[in-house]
Length: 208
Image 1 (tube, rainbow, N blue to C red):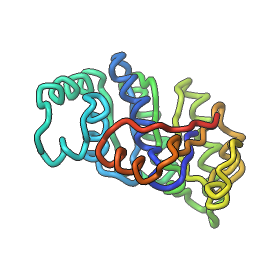
Image 2: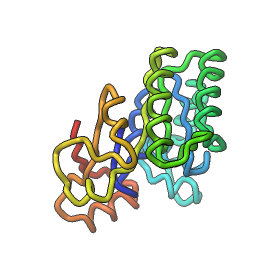
Image 3: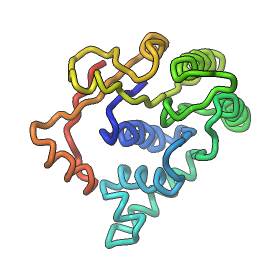
Image 4: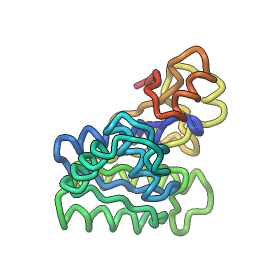
């Protein structure tokens, strides 16, 4: 589980890991519950080519040759992006389906607080059920699953070095084999946001 406050770079963090797998010709399947396929793809290509994804998607001046090479690597890796699945049952079914077609090396779910669970009546029940189902799916499929999660308002205010403030359920951290809470790693938050917007590298602090 990778957790962070809103707009802190959770998706970018997961896409950096995904880019590493793509470069190794390994297959990733990405479930985006918030962003379009084009947005995810442009961010990924931006990371792989050290360019701004926004520049690429808007077709501003950029290195088109590097983008073409990155797109070929993504295609060759058989990466799949889904952005039309929200219910836990449909996500889980899709994971088994994808893995049966072509073995998957990594699943990414962006992000947990947008997942729905049939019959669940509260956010706590929804998230607890979803995270436990994902834990079981990872064991059955023998494939790692990266789940992105928001940090609670209280956790964001504390900025502590503990990893227990995921939003919605205490089961999130306890179900994870590895729980990571990301925070800003630079003193000047304005400069940090400017760099992030421009697609420049930024320092992050990862509490593991």
